[in-house]
Image (cartoon, rainbow, N blue to C red; front, side):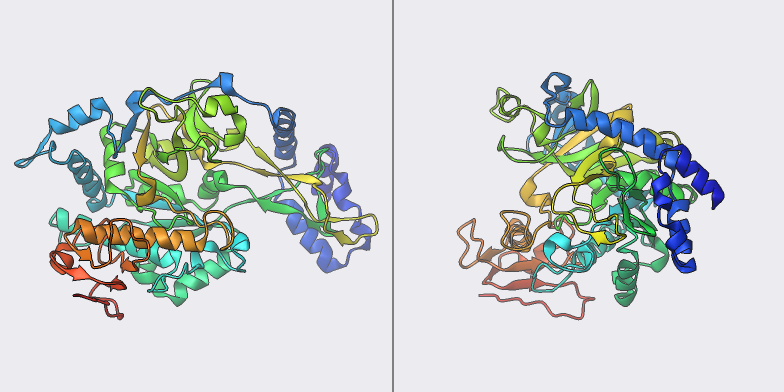
Length: 510
């Protein structure tokens, strides 16, 4: 303990021992355990970087940014001229890609899955505080007819994409996509118990791993560690960019290497429409030889408060809405689209060697980001107080800050209505609510039915009153529905389950 005290004093944090003489033995043990995990030297370095950020807060960086290179972007909606030409010249069997330029990419991606070369990293450290619930977001039920939670929907999509790969490549055995789930100290036990209670939603237990992101001390505006109580340091999770340090802590890189993983997709827990292990996206990244890639959706409104992917001082990164001026955010291309239109949806691709490089060489180099917060603290009387005003900072890192280290970076633009419906706020908020997510999910399923040759009696092409849910175990991306819905007319509700599910489909045919 004396060594920790000396280190704290050396780095100007001696105040953490202020109440030491008044603590019980149990409280001393708790404080010792708390302090033993703190890198006091790193705190000083991070704070100096944070001071620079605080000084620049509110300043615009228009002169430091430029749009992504045209040759790094492929849009499923538009397609870059280079990629359209290249993919239409490739033949698969007798089918030319002029009929569907995405087929080649799907084949590449499904081959990687079939060869057991793909892994998933899920960012699931957040609690459901803004949703008004005391449990992790992944356990939330948005009100679908099936009552499936975010975790169940995502797990079932993994199962289905594995089966698709098995079928496409005529394999005799289902491939495995290991799912590594980053949780926080606060969500770990509840998340693990939830998966156990639901038998891992059909996945093999050995292929689902939980690992914990680190906590960082909260600081006041002088760089001093804030004490939440006499024997407890105020700490907060280190952000989704803490992923890379957490992977090292849990020896995940070694596990991936043993499994022969070559392609990794990173995704957030709160996107109800997320396509886990998207074969087309992975195929594109592999075909382009990308070390890193990111999915984006088109930002259409300049005032939309989302981060956009662009070049910052000639390196790829994400710029927040508040960091660029109104004039720059409103600039448009000749085709009318915003110049800075690639909105970040927290879905990224890394090849294994790049991820290994990041975890080995760059974890400590990722820039800290500052969030001003109201942080509970212990006052002069030794009482914990909840402040009414901002009194300190939480330090976090962002998962996309590794973009700048990529030697070959690509973007893959998808349609928001197909792939991005984040759940962040309780009903009553203006966006990202359970009601909004549910509507987008039901509408996607409705369009799957229409695309497979079915129709609804009351459908005018945009009728959001239709309730239509399709189990991810039945269809990953609208496939395998023709035999059920083609040339059929339905009325709402229509709920389609896979044969293996105990629930029965609601086939309200006319």
